[in-house]
Image: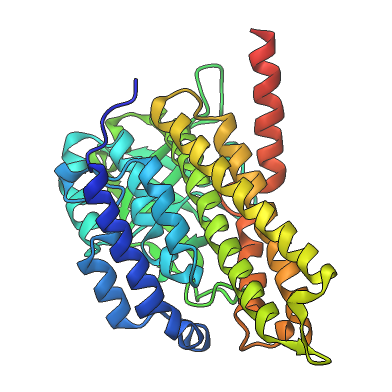
Length: 388
């Protein structure tokens, strides 16, 4: 069932090389600036657009690079090596928002939006989470009511990534109560400048400075019939679940990238910092911490690659993504914690890379489905497979 990737191995190797160079030479030296200003500099954004990073996972027929998920995770591990705000800037275009259109949009919807999403000219935001509905979309209260030949949307969304910059919101709304025929959740394409759409002020977060989120309000927002993704009401929940499952493998890969960075920072520190004239890396208890970090990183890397391969082949698009996200995001938290420990007091200081990583990776266990939700998906999936 595995289709040949759009991007051959030799071409992809070059994409990976350029991305690694960009991350290490252009972005890493400016991590502190990004953290201090809570923004990605315009020249870094322009370089990312030029490289095609806003559309790396969008198929080539719509102007993207066309990477499949096995390639996506290799790229994500490179992007995860620096501040997560970089990836967040184009993450929704390639991931949860863009993939809803790629997988479920009508031909007209794809033609209208995907080229400009892939180029970065349009920033697309995935508007699913609400104050009372997070990891489980079944609890949505945002309403879409038919009005004439269009729809009227009312509701509030919360923690919406890239909302302050978005040109297009991919909005999940309830068209009817859940019943025997389905969840009653549909998806709508809502341009940010549509009357009745308002974006709250930028959230102040524990970490991930430079990655912007905000509330979005929809107050009697009128959209035409053509705004309904897939042209049918019943696409919504499936679109959300599919986009989130794919996104989970990507988030797992990002976690591995961050963990690798925390490990490398720890090894470099242990090799150069001395205590009583001896490098601390010579102490066995420090070596034990480095060993635990290395073990976590290697296990995570293998798991991510395996989950991506199973997604692309169609073998497992439900349990494996949740396993990868659960393990890798929890692992990144442990590795970051150990990195702070290896650094001692220095690791608690704001200008230290591992201090930032420690705060940044905490979010990975919350978004695109909390660790608890992943456990429910895995456990429930195993039981369903047995009952069959």
